[in-house]
Amino acid sequence: MSEVGSQPAEAIMEGALQAEQLGLAINLDLVNQEVLDFAGQYTNEWWERTSFTTQNALRSAITDHIATGAPLRVLERNLEPLFGRARARVIAATETTRMYAEGNRRAYKSAGIQRVEFQTVRDARVDPLCDALQGWQLDIDDKSNFPPIHPRCRCWIAPITGEGEVLTQAVSGPGAPKSIEVQARELLTSARKARPAVTRALNKVVKARDGKLVG
Image (tube, rainbow, N blue to C red; front, top):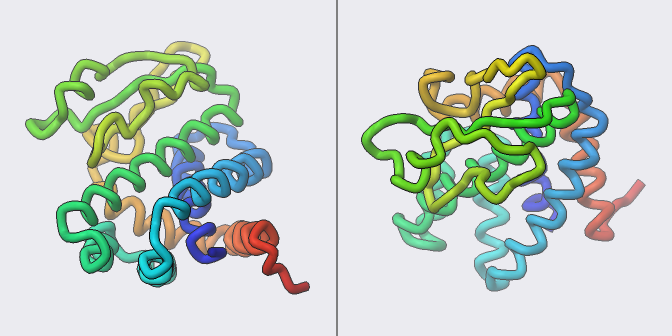
């Protein structure tokens, strides 16, 4: 399970590294440990809902996705034989949004951010539930209205500084013109180059959690 265990951890970490690009003073040491704790819980809950055969196939698809840094649509295509096209798209998009939101949240919090603002892509595809939350400001620990609000949610949270400024450059939408797929790929690539030790540490801790650590 170690390979799958590293996937949500890396995805959350990309959200944290992305938050760092906003100029916030991110405490990555603190974020790293919190990411590992959350990823372990998330992985166990997800893993227990899949059959043994699906686990093996899912492990392979996710491992390949991490190794190549491919766009989200590639992961969707690889998940299609397991879940069907429609469900594969839902799973890939929804869980990517969830991991990025959690990474953003933990990074913002480590930088002293106390409140965030809910942001949508503001296009015709925005769900009414999300549209009603656009601009909604909430405490950073109040995750009741954090993305994803619904399957295939594309929303994100933006940090609010102590001066009340909303930094809207986030995962997707007008504040960040690149698509979530492009950003995910670029962030994964830059993270590997800039912080290879982080990835190694994530994998090492996950393996230790699974009882597979050897030296």
